[in-house]
Image (cartoon, rainbow, N blue to C red; front, side, top):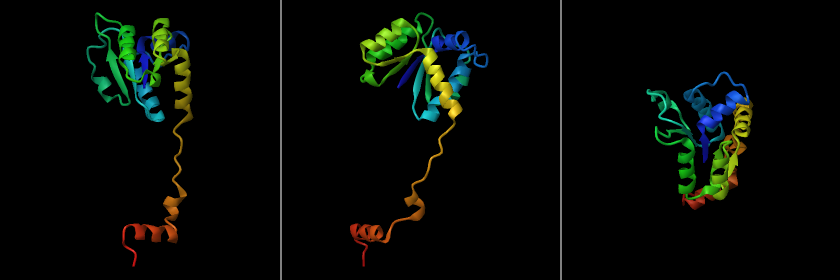
Length: 159
């Protein structure tokens, strides 16, 4: 499971990569949703504050759970809580350039990725495109006569 510090990643996009196409939380979540769908995993992203009044655009985001810390909390505290509460923290990847979160991840043996490194990984994966899945040759060719006989015998259908 990947947990992302949303505001930290948005800052990295604008400050480090000069990314102009992604300016809102929703736009970032749509890109990350495509990324997670492509790699076949799910992720979580946590933003500071209460978020936009109309959260309905987030309802169409797949592969990514979106959280807002609320008015009296920050995303770092929410993510720290998720790290502490996780039953298998070694399987977590925490995305943030914030030292506090990277330290919390390290203390629980979770992987810590800087936002800049993670975004490069996302861009590489999305530009790579979907891998073409090859069907096994057996699917096209069918079973051999010996395999067919064996299955008929197993199911008691042999004559």
